[in-house]
Amino acid sequence: MECELPRVNSNRDEMKEYFEACKTIAVLGCSPKADKASNRVAKYLLEAGYNMIPVYPKEDEILGQKVYRSLAEIDMPVDMVVIFRKPAALNAIADAVIARGDVKVYWTQLELINNEAADKVKEAGIHVVQNYCAMVEHRAIFSY
Image (cartoon, rainbow, N blue to C red; front, side, top):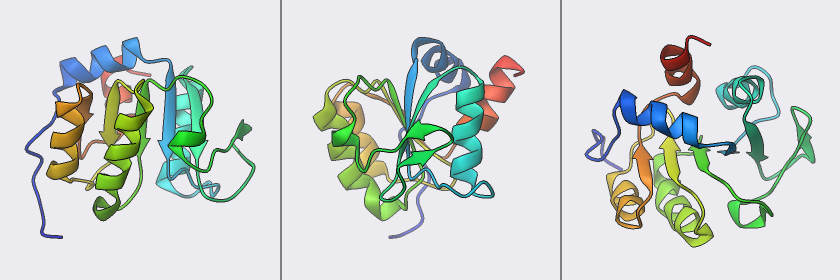
């Protein structure tokens, strides 16, 4: 895939609204390894008071939370999905986010940009954040 700049994105004021409105955040690609960015962000979100749901193909528990193998398997409403997967996987992830019907925010981490997937999600009425770290933005907004 060719390098992209985000064509669809949110600003910091909108991100603040998303964090205030969202209670349950699925972290897609949440590693069980403490030295991985996905684990650090997931831990931060838990400590900030969110119901963090790890989504990972292996493990039964990460950070004391039940692990789900896919978004479709999660048996409770999900407000936001924070994504740690390669840009090539984002089209399928966008489809899964849309299929759930309850996700309000689709958030891809730093260097994760796929405008085709973002367009699809936005057209479905879901807010889009691309190429931002959820932990860094939350910290900056709330001085947590």
